[in-house]
Image (tube, rainbow, N blue to C red; front, side, top):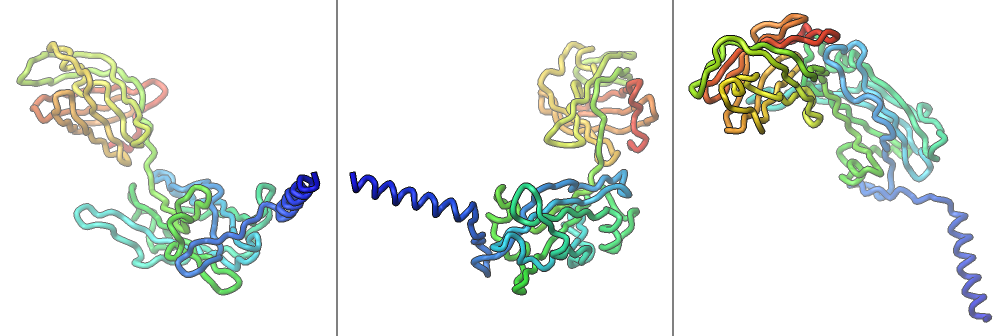
Length: 315
């Protein structure tokens, strides 16, 4: 019995000791140069894209939490740098300027306590206009698909710096840490062409069959969630195959909207690829000529729905 009481006492003492230590584990961070350091946990990605059609109201905005051995108190500054990049087909990435430039500096006073953790947090935003000016460009220079790379350098009161160069892969990418020290803000072109529409088709031609005159029906552009700006077309021939005795079946042809530039891609159930030419567009009618690699073609006039005119930027 004495041994049982002694063992119980040891267990109770251990529990008291552990509970008195609170839920603190010193952030032993595997930087390439430091055993113990600091990192910036990403709490909220409030805005991480710029809208090509509304640059004046676009912004990059985050909430960051500084994690270190003193609950964030070792932080001195966080320098935020920016660089613009563009993919040039056949050439590669073009950076403007060639090296990142400073756009904003957060000081220790910008980080404050919060009700959700013991570490200090800061929320900030940088407008698209500020980012564009910082890299020496104007809004007229920006294209859909451009990317602004924001990188951060944390300096602590010991003079040490932590950044994307010395952070480990675990700290940068693991969900718990989520501290990449860099964020890629893409210039996107929101697209909203999804729906079911009435159409008429003319000028159809094929070596496999014919369908003279005009046919009509409905067509669906179904948004593809994994590929923003792309829509699966319910029938890439706009009724032509049905008219001469075939059926669309399992074809996968897409309408793609890249900042207003329309293209067609994908293949039908026989493996023939598809392309298109935009003939004309106004609020009510979108007219296109489709063509597949088997030489089949036709022209479709697609009517907009009553409450949703075709966008004026389509081309």
